Image 1 (cartoon, rainbow, N blue to C red):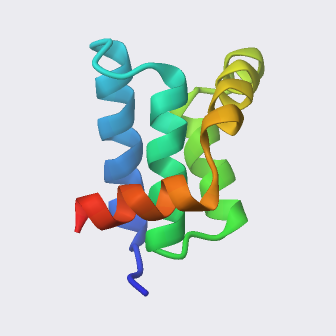
Image 2: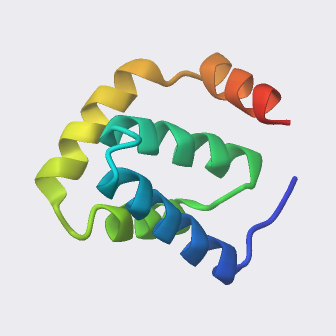
Length: 87
């Protein structure tokens, strides 16, 4: 499995914030992408939580809504397909 440095985590957070601010991605799409990266790069639960909190800037209600939508979209096969397409 791949690993991600702290610098890469910060770059991920900043890029996701930029994409959300530019409305290039919807909130749930960001979460789906983060979850695919988490699986592919073996990001731990603490790292994923940190990343999502930073991206959503502590807006728990917005994060909860995005998580609710993304949870209806994500399953193991879907994540595997994203990873395969990215590689």
